[in-house]
Image 1 (cartoon, rainbow, N blue to C red):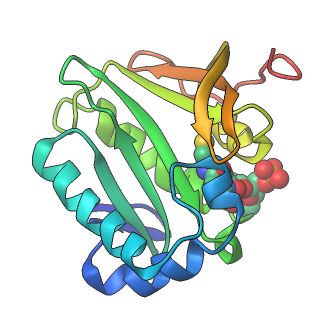
Image 2: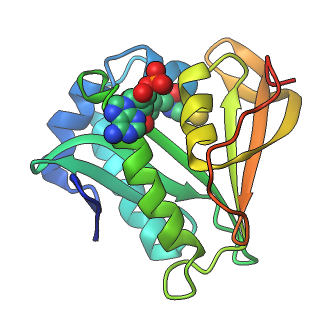
Amino acid sequence: MLRTARLELSVPEAADADAVLAACQDPEIPRYTSVPSPFARADADQLIAKAHAGWASGEHLVWAIRDAGALVGIVGLYRVDGRGSGELGYWLAAPARGRGLLTEAARTVLDWGFAPSGAGLHRIEWHAVVGNDASARVAQALGFRFEGVRRDALIGEAGRVDGWAAALLQADDRTPQVWPSPHG
Ligand SMILES: CC(C)(COP(=O)(O)OP(=O)(O)OC[C@H]1O[C@@H](n2cnc3c(N)ncnc32)[C@H](O)[C@@H]1OP(=O)(O)O)[C@@H](O)C(=O)NCCC(=O)NCCS
């Protein structure tokens, strides 16, 4: 369990399935994440089960973002490889966007991810579909350094697409970054 000024971050539970189901009807979430489309109740149950399995294996460390107790999104450190690398991933329910909630949640997850008393990571990567400007603004605000375009690297609903890559090292300062436009 992690706390931020406005939010509580904790493991998604079975009781969150309705909120996950409602949020994932927004086409922007399957468009830009590995969430399936169409998204049914069984997919919500599976997302929650996978979060528990991820904590058990240590490979995917996933939190529900809770605003006044209600799940408004998901943030996680994925593909934690046991050698000091992981990947930040996230989505927010559409009504919760535009208030800086994701940036606030992710900042705390990064603090924990890099802390020796947390995941003790050295490098946290960020990957997004080329053109996902909302996610790129978040990554820049968090201090991620742009590393380039990975051709046909991501597999989405429409097949293979190019991906933007960025990363943050444990020793990097977290001042907001300005990436080259249009990000390579
Ligand atoms: C990516 C995503 C999480 C961004 O959501 P968001 O609400 O824009 O992100 P934040 O909560 O950090 O809010 C940032 C925005 O809130 C504004 N804001 C308001 N108050 C703020 C505060 N106190 N602190 C920071 N930002 C604040 C900022 O100006 C910023 O707007 P801008 O990007 O137009 O400048 C959301 O668009 C989403 O879920 N998309 C679909 C899934 C997805 O793409 N996931 C990422 C895959 S790589």
